[in-house]
Length: 304
Ligand code: RUB
Image (cartoon, rainbow, N blue to C red; front, side, top):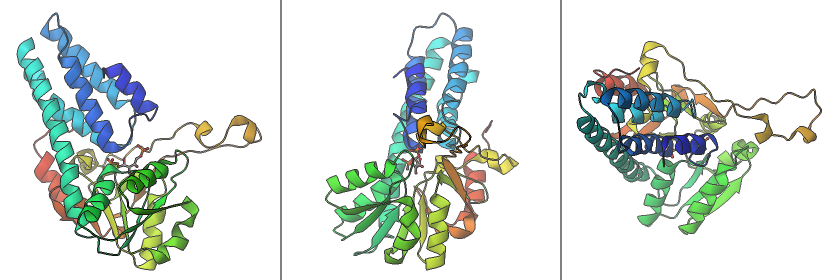
């Protein structure tokens, strides 16, 4: 898919979920690099403006920025077209491969925290979370999953259908049933769009409500996140932009009086104190160790 189609598909939520968005961004740059280029100067200018265009598609998931930085690593130092093409295509393929591999590893590592007979609650639709649940199921564990609807886009329906296809016992609940159903839940597992240097997790709106309800009911709360969901910019005090989407996703103009305002933030932040562990491809880490991992992983990188 070319850059413009990728940007449109991400904006329209045809491509969604932080991992998919990151891989789609890397793939679009790889595809663009393979085009015919007149000279290296034009190539650099156009590829860098494509990066900005991709970044503007959705503002919250740092995975997209990290995927693009990975893909563009060494590009500005390239002195000829064939070297630059080769580098971008290789980086793009490597990012996609490593990203898919990270999700698979998270599945294996996270599944070990799911006990036989467990009732799991999840929110929205995270490929990393699905991988943990499916892996536990493949290992013969009896599971029961509560999938929240996740208004307004109702990604919970995707989650429920996907798990049902695998033969997993899954129940769809409305978002406001979370606290009530928490009493029947053994573990909460959610995905992440961005993980900040202080161990907070930005994920689908409502995630922090699950965390509070889990904390109150003393139910363990796990987050799945590939290390490219960690935001090095937050080491420098940058805050994460929470995407606000169109009011039409919540209510049509004819449903409400013209004076009614609609506010539609689509992500929220869960503080580190409510998170028992973050399942990464490196293992399960505490929110407090995110800072050290970031320094080690991104320390020598130009993160802007
Ligand atoms: C999706 C969402 C997912 C994370 C992680 O929101 O919040 O939990 O992106 O997903 P949206 P993954 O549908 O608005 O993109 O584990 O697949 O990266």
